[in-house]
Structures are given as C-alpha cells and as structure tokens.
Amino acid sequence: MPADKEMPATIRRSPAKARETWGKTHDSAVEQYGEGERAHRTAFASLKHSFEKVGDRWQAKKKGPSDPGAAARGKPARERDYETFGGVDYYGHTKAELYDRAKDLGVPGRAKMDKADLARAIARKQR
Image (tube, rainbow, N blue to C red):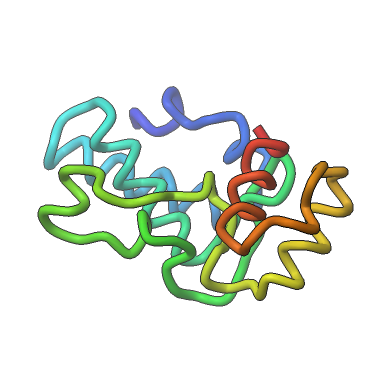
C-alpha cells in the first residue's frame, strides 16, 4: 500500500482513525490521479474533515471542513485558490479559543491578531 511509505510523521503519531482516513484516501487518490502532490492534497483534505492538527499530531474534531482549503471543490481546489491554515481548525474554533492556543504556544503579538492571523501563527508554531 503506497500510503504506508508516504504517510507523514505527524499522521503516524496520530490516532488509528486518522491514519486509516489518510491512508485510504491517499491510496484511492493514487489510483485515480497517480502518485504525487494531488494525492497528498486529497488525503489531507479528507483528513481535515474529521481531524485538526494540534502540536505534532492530528486530533479528532467536530466533522466538517476546517478551513477554506478543505472546503474547496472543483476549479478553486485545482488552482489552489484558498488558504489552508496548516491544519488548524479555523471554522471550528472561535477567535478566543485560537487566542488561548496561541497563548499556550507563546505566539508573540497575539493580542493584535485577527482570527486568521492567529490560525496562521499557530500553524507556524506547530510545524
């Protein structure tokens, strides 16, 4: 199975359901599109409907897209005309919740950031 070789470390450290979701979607995308970036983007988009990146692993969340990238379909998805926020659940958290996470991570300047800036800063810290 190609997903076993291609699975990123953050997913390997995640719950079995996250690994299974990413792996099945990745393998299906490889069959349809071939190996490469498109298969990875498809697998991450699927993963982000049920999981969000917290620290160095993915954790379960309420179902639904977590950011404009996970919600993108059709031409915008193909042209990457969206922002992904690095796996942070932008739609599933309030600004206050993102602020608290940024505070825990020690993000400087968080008091002046809007919700999108907080999500970007959290994603950078979690890399």
